[in-house]
Length: 456
Image 1 (cartoon, rainbow, N blue to C red):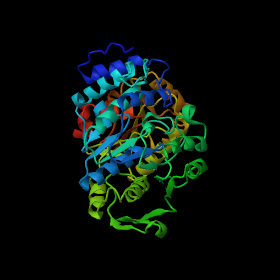
Image 2: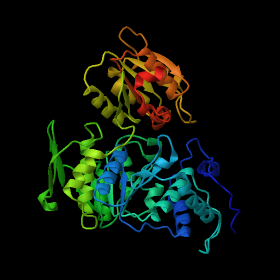
Image 3: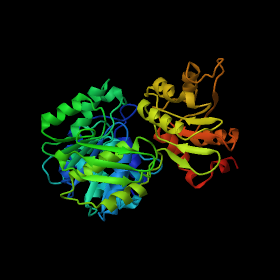
Image 4: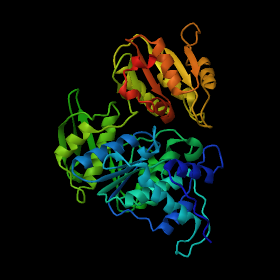
């Protein structure tokens, strides 16, 4: 028998309701598709347009943003689901390249609640308890399904095989870089993690693998399910110099080429790998969604994604990056190294306690002179004082054993203010370690300010 539908008038009320439904565990994560599929069936949820699902450890958000930009420039109405958000929940659902209005999500949240509480005429009764991620995913998928889209681009939240996004069958799957992260849930090595990511593959449909050295489990799974495997370095490749780059399919895949491309507007050497996978996905869906070379050029030139090696104008130089595992921190370090010389680099750093903190810090410590550590507003976040202990035990010490920890702070913005006060105009500040670290400084409009002005 159906329960009583609560009256919710704002998105914040619905999100608080979602958080209350599934309080078990510190993280509120419970992988599995049974619950979310059951509610989706009650909702008769389907996606009436081509779907691209993107999984991977790093590069998912950039891949989704480039797909969105190129298809938009080609004249298609795009819908994108990504997570987590940086500042506002609405960032998770973009329609026509704009975050959906909070009020536009309310009917979908109410529909999910009705479906999870009762049968809705389906004959399947009984209350279904959903996690926060499952509930919000269903609401966003419903919103996208009713938005008259030409293409839907869905980012997997965690893993792939058992992630709520995987209830939707993709017309093309993309698997980006696979690295060690969320190991307690996904497995202790790249093979195990790769197997989970490969769960988004579908029989007879293309899967683009843009990891240059994919785990064997990914390749084996493609063969097992009969997916059409497109691998970077084998079925498509890229090459470039300091001014431009080019991309080409292998002749066996049709041999299409793009030459003389400007570098993607998203900064970082790793973005060419992501962009190559994007172009392969676009080629895979070309029969249904044709795209011109000009749309590719314009899309790559105009793509935007906050928090991915984002450089904020002003003095001192300010870099924002959501790098939050050893592989992404290594990429950040490479990109910082390529920026040139700065007398002193200050870090604003906050991270989750379940991350491989020693490995993360080892990859970047040689570039950081002063650390400003911050608490984050989540139970599973590491305290700033605990981060200081990790740094002082090894990576955070300068020669002679002197600590490079400049201070511990209650919030990312407080840490950033302290870093700005300490820095000279010619220095550099990098904010990283978590979406919540970067989001904590973005929420107060930092991109609209020169970093030096934060001290005022």
